[in-house]
Length: 148
Image 1: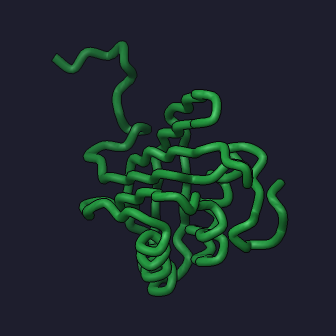
Image 2: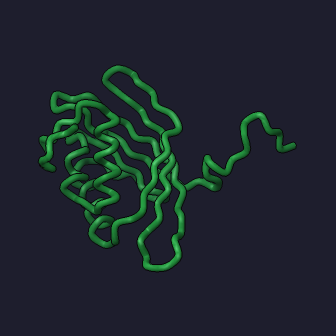
């Protein structure tokens, strides 16, 4: 497990550990936890429908705005694919985000590509690109079922 400190020096032994910490920080609206997962050298973050944010300062400002202006969401993550390229790992996940609005839950289904880099400080997120999807993976027909 990563160290309990949420400082930038938090060390993640695996890319999966870093990913768990990223989604935990999101679910807990924890800016310090969010800062701990990001690589400091030219990371990129693309929120759904937005332009790319390049650099740690811009990314953290954006996440601080998101995390500071909402109640903790109900967040569920489903792994679609993981690619291990040695010192780089790419994870494609489905994010189900249910904002805590105090009313009936509204699910936002997003697809995200998360890229992790093995650094001298352990694994760090270097890219997060989330986009909306028309149909969730769970509701798609099995691949052997023909639609036409």
